[in-house]
Length: 149
Image (tube, rainbow, N blue to C red; front, side, top):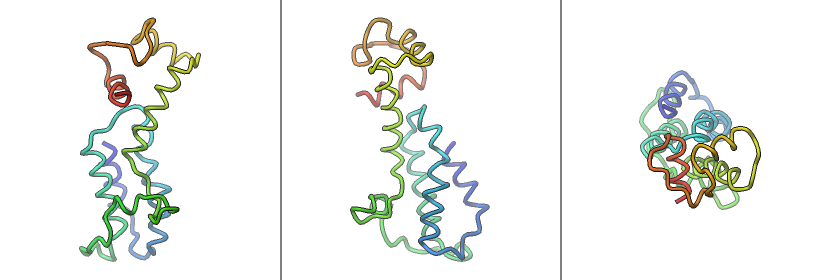
């Protein structure tokens, strides 16, 4: 779903006149924020991450008129932080795991918000996150369990 939305946005953008620096700013500011909400609640499938990476890489390397152009570097090399020689593009897999791990931290740290209390009551009872053994659960909770493992 997030990958489709990114592809739809890219189809309407006319960025043939932008430099690589302009494209990098646009990628970091807009395209990385589209899937952020979903990644905060669901563990996305690997195919979604690959489609997002492909769409962002094609946008970064494309020329005027959407001519096919060789990608001069792998996307993994571009998503390395700037301090280490990359362009600092967001690694969506790592961000997805970090956002879900934040939920686990809040549950284990004793946060007393209504949402966290509801999750504790529904899935944990008197156990901790690392002790629970719920067999059937929501897509959200199953994503948290995969991140936990």
